[in-house]
Amino acid sequence: MVRPRRATAAPAPAATVTMTPVAMRQAIAEGVNAILDERAAAQQAQNGGIGEGNPSKRELGESSASLPKILPVTGEPIHHTIPLLATRIARHEDRLNDIVNVINGLPCGHITEDVNNLIIGQMAVESKVEQIKTEFSESMEFIAALCSANVTMGDVLTSFDHELEQISAQNFSLRRAIQESYARERTRDRTIETLTTKITEFQRSMDEVSGKP
View 1 (cartoon, rainbow, N blue to C red):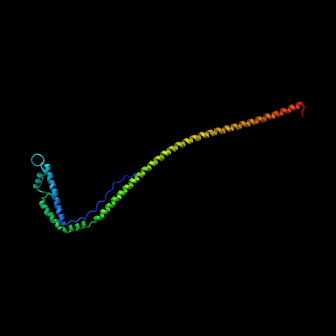
View 2: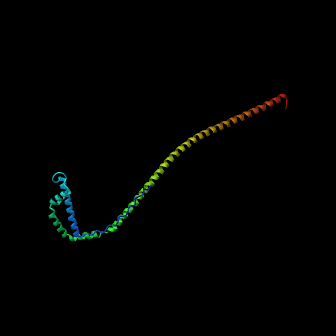
View 3: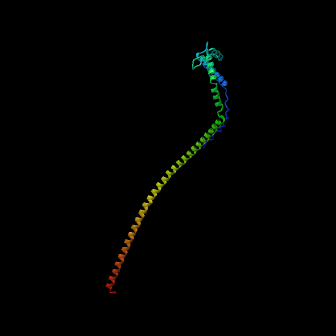
């Protein structure tokens, strides 16, 4: 039996991504600052903070703000590296504009529609697979029933063969008895014929003795 599948709502079409180079630079800077703040807070928490017990979030924030922010990849201070990154981004602004244009030109609606079609197709395939599994299970049960019926039929045929052997033996015995009966009947006929001949001869002899013609 095919298990009913829960209806899945199709995801809403994704909005077209629009980003300017300035927004990209700002997002990169904010992301780097957030990563560094998290690393500094984690390092402060790992060192145990200042004084007894665990430091509060405020203490962690103040400690992370007082620590020098360093890029983990290059090991350079962040206040030196960010201006360099901004300069490089400005230098490649045309290229970034091209990348942004490519991103903005992506057919998100068509991609979403294709993904939805793929999801629907996958659900149809899964439903078909479940149906095939059910049909295969039913076929296996039918084959098992056929095998059981075949075994039963084999037993019946074996019983028939045994009965036929007994009937054949009885038929052979009956035919032999009939042949013996025919032989006895022929012997009796010959005996009667012999006795009749002897009686006729004896009667003739008696007639001759008595002088009868």
